[in-house]
Length: 558
Image 1 (cartoon, helix red, strand yellow):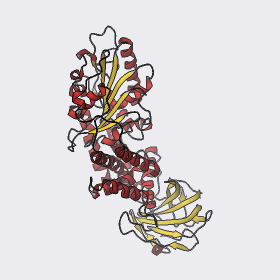
Image 2 (cartoon, one colour):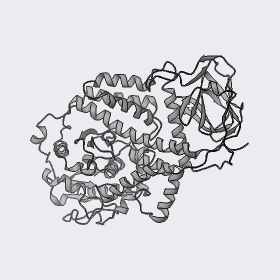
Image 3 (cartoon, rainbow, N blue to C red):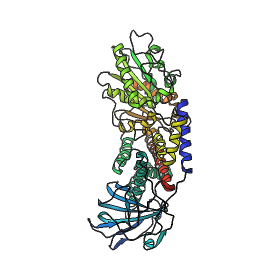
Image 4 (cartoon, helix red, strand yellow):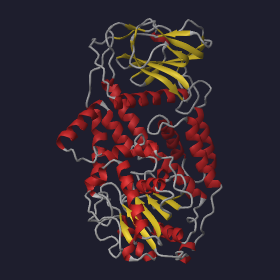
């Protein structure tokens, strides 16, 4: 792992670990009294579930019809108003740790940031109204709070924070809480996640412990509202398609195929290697780990991409004409991803022009693999690539980068961010490529761009990688492989040293599919990889939620 990546991980953990220590004041009206939000019979009273995945009712359900209007149970500020898993909900912060939530709704009369009075109209119901109350994040029975003084806190002025990143993070945090509520509404039996969980448990009962399944389900709940913001249907489809792929695998190469495989040598082959964030031109990076010469490449035909433009010094010295040679430092890898993709696309065109009769293969590690996929798509059909392989590359965005993005978007995180800008502007936490690597950044928004048709594309992830979890290293248009053991030390940076990786290179160069994997191993990899990724996404939501609980939202006077 490069020095820059190590600094990134250490600083990431520092930020995540210290943001909760900054506390801001919470304000509330001094005489907050709740009232029922509708004048309708109670259909189902508060019934707290016996456990996380049991059915129950965390609030009160009222017998309302579509179009009935509802009002705010008390004075406060609207902190969420929008869709959650296909229905519309509102959350009001009354201060002092008290929040109330209303839904599903048909129409909205208020929006996020609006100040409301007790009894002020919020909109109309979509049918049966669910009303809940939380105190410091814990659901309580709202009925005893009606007509009672529930908050007695000194009133302070409210100052609006208009930072869009903080607003987006706050919205994700509240959507998480509301989605969690929906999964446990009366009769839901824990919702879609429990249904998926029961199926996964049935399939994998003999291959993984129950606590792994439980952890996966909790993580999937979180993943629905942070990071890529998948809908329940999309996430269910992702998990089901993964399990279907396990039960009905694509053609693969059996044991011994890699040892017997020989590269298809119809003409000369050139290997272009693209290293990742924090790499430099003076250190071999993954090219040294892969030792591509052992697979039939001439030493002078293994060349490295330079983030400063062209190829690194010493690459392709015997070529009659070729791209320029430039050295690069770790700082150049922090440039915007789109800029580096354009530079690599230029290199591909130049290498093809200089070597019209050669086959061109592309190998990328981490960020370099993302650049390889996007540059391959950009240069199609100008450059006919043969084999493209990526290693530990966050093709849909890195969950860890999303954690850092969320951390720096909180109120204390903004202080950290301003300090880095002032005293350490070259910090890896502030480089453009890191922001682009977030699931909400450039890489996340280009995740659907596939490897070109006709390219033999293979993506490889490490099952113990916490920087880019194994399941997150796949990309459309490629066969995905997960390798390695269970020790996270060096899992990301040293993936190129693994014999399994070298076998996959041998198979790809021979035009053969990846090595076969047992069903139990494949299921375990699917579950653990998704768990690692979604726990990291959950950390983003937890950071934001903690910031809000310590004073990220204040109730103004009116």
